[in-house]
Image 1 (cartoon, each protein chain N blue to C red):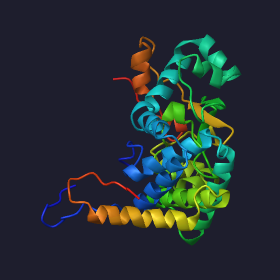
Image 2: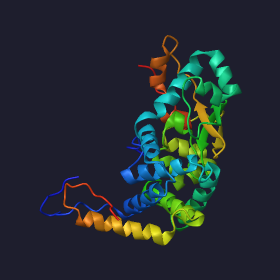
Image 3: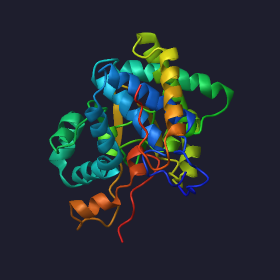
Length: 104
Length: 204
């Protein structure tokens, strides 16, 4: 229970958090709706083993957001997977030191 | 992150969740569902601006100004907003005051609801299953693990935060602080003391 003063362990967690808050503020879903969905994912994931509140927690957050966006049609699962693959390729094909961009 | 140019001719590949977040961000910004500037503003706020130092200012003022404490009891969100502190998840703040008879402690059994504008992003332990499950079941044991031992005569009251109501614990003012000003008092107020899993520091 030490070293917990940094709000996020990794940058993607901060990005994910910001994305979720921005979507809620833009009216995509209410915060109570979000907490209900997130609580359900935590319960599901926590049934197998106790969650640590770090990676476990943010993974559950990501799964919840992916599910909500799939459900609303804002980001279908296959679309998200296709873009993820494009990002992966962009990272693998961008020379070290160059900014990684998604052009397609 | 140390890396050798020759071992990594391409840019280091981010983790799977990092790529999935990037994918969502790409899709949502392309569709105009989120504004990249709004994302940056949210990041800046939560990574650099808000944190327990803001809650500590509120507590220090509650300790020193009875009128302000009365306002907090009446309408905590309004009283806090009057100090220029407002924002998401702080709309319905309720203060709970520790006394010699009652010690208050906050949890969110559903997920991790927390008064962001006052305390920032919750620490990992607040989000862990261990704390979320045990705070209600065996609060005294949990408190003992945080190094807080209460007299038998002091009751423990556990408050379950929700998306609608966020609690801020007003800890008891430490003895020997009569001459201290608001800044010095705020320095004594720890994050954990405002969640109820700690007590304020003693003055030096």
